[in-house]
Length: 173
Image 1 (tube, one colour):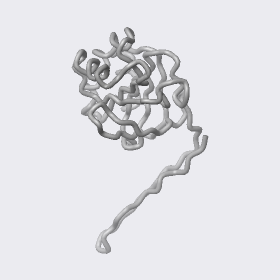
Image 2 (cartoon, rainbow, N blue to C red; image 1 turned 60 degrees about the horizontal axis):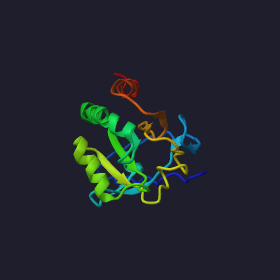
Image 3 (cartoon, one colour; image 1 turned 135 degrees about the horizontal axis):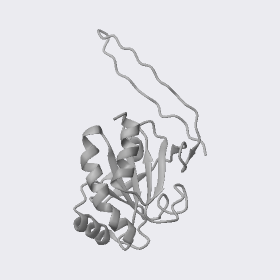
């Protein structure tokens, strides 16, 4: 799969001086560690449209779930805690529901049951949260996307300790 690079625009007032440098890196777009994460735009459970590319420069945890997934429900409290602890470092969490088992009420049930404050996205056609694109075959699946858009880690199931080790490594903490 290939994608064209995003165009970057910079506005400079004639009285200003500006300098910019860019490090463009060739890479494979895919779903494995080291690949460039596949971009997507999905609606969240409040009706807002969220795109992965809007989070460039941040570490993003993609956590794929559905309401009846016991493993997903077991790890949500730890994911919520790591989100709260690492949010000051710019870490974001996007929960993605394939919506083939759930409806909007189910997603709200998950949010309320675990008091989740991160974004929950609705993948109505399971384009990204199924076997296509991100290759999700087992739930929960968690993918950490680094600040440059590359996949830093891919896990089925996770823990606070595992995520904090990965985040600390990327952040240099």
